[in-house]
Image (cartoon, rainbow, N blue to C red; front, side):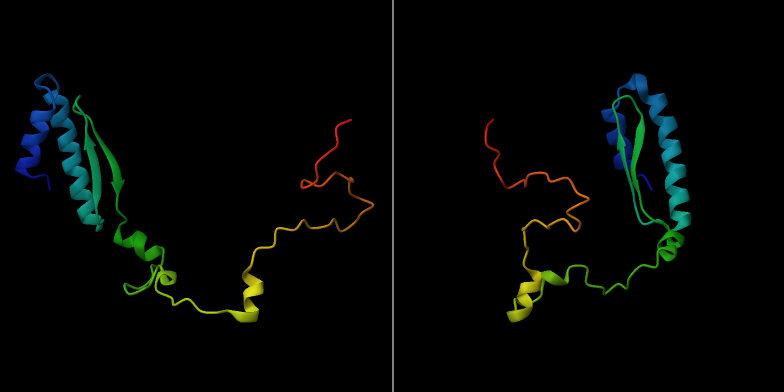
Length: 124
C-alpha cells in the first residue's frame, strides 16, 4: 500500500490549500491499489501533481489477462540472437542479402512508362 514516508512526502510536495484534493485522490488511489491486488495485477505506476491530482500511468496485467494471452514460459528466450554464434552461411548467404534493384513491371502495356527513380532527367 502507500507507506507513511510516501504520505509525508506527498503532503510536503502539495501546498496546504490543495490537501483536500490530495486526500480525496489518495483515497481513490488506495481503493485502486486494493482492487489491483485482488485481481492479481503485478504493478501500478502513478504520479502526484502539485495541485493534489494523482494520475495512474501504468497498471499491470491481471492473472486472467495474462492467462488469456497464453504467455510463454518463464524460461523463454526473448532475444536469442544476442547469444547465437556468428556462422558462415556460405551459399545460403545470397538469400539473406538485400537486393536494391528495381522490379520491372509485369505488363508493359498496362503501365505508364514513368522514368526510373534512379535516372536523372535532363533539363528541357
